[in-house]
Image (tube, rainbow, N blue to C red; front, side, top):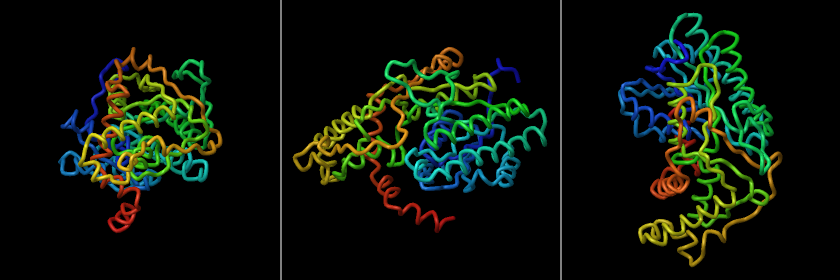
Length: 372
């Protein structure tokens, strides 16, 4: 396969496919390419949720496998069973705060786990089936580049890596391992580095779903430091579209940045979400009955819940992605504006109370223990 050919996957393994971004990618892929086989492998740690895949579980081209990417033998067995030609690797520990308090898990999953998966891919695609058309699509983050000052240009693919948290360091290491398997063994790989995602099915420890769900319960909205940390926000379906374009049209062995071209300070995001949730509940009597603890039902505003807390160690000040390479080479453009994407996100959480209450209460983890 030359770099100019369109790559056409047939049997795809999605690691971490029960997580936030992975599950949204699975929904996108099966809808866009209904004839493809999609196998999800997920260890179902705290942020993995099989309920995220309920809408596709009856699809004959879908299979879920409860397994860990650290298990090389199992991964190799699965590649053989399903004749996998493409791996889309989402599986990762991803919460920065957790990486500060417990970095070991990030090294295990993000570094060692990625390496075990790369070994299995090499064994199946290069050693057992030399010449087989294949692709290892590795999903990474803009946090590997470090931080930006207010007037710095956005991150490019040639920006030197400078990770500032154990999470970012573990993802940078995994990126380097992927690159090394391309350069040393000839494994066909691509790396995508994305900006902050938001949308349906995001675990409520992350900023936007945390703010939404806390408002509905009139709980404090914790803001680190002065709240002026800037992030580039990307709606999760736009991320899925970007990965699709990289897989089909990207030059093998290349990294591509996927951004929303959408920089917002954290405090401005929080204020916007507060206004949206207040307005939604104020305009809908059914929501007032459903969420009687929300501030607007008590004659208050959600913004009154904002609470400034001590900044976390090594907190990067600004991230911003320059997606020019993706724009020019593969035709990537985000479809959602932040205004449309955040409205969809708020609406989803208002309509899916059972989902977020379950994952926040721990009932889901108890269920998993019984099932697996």
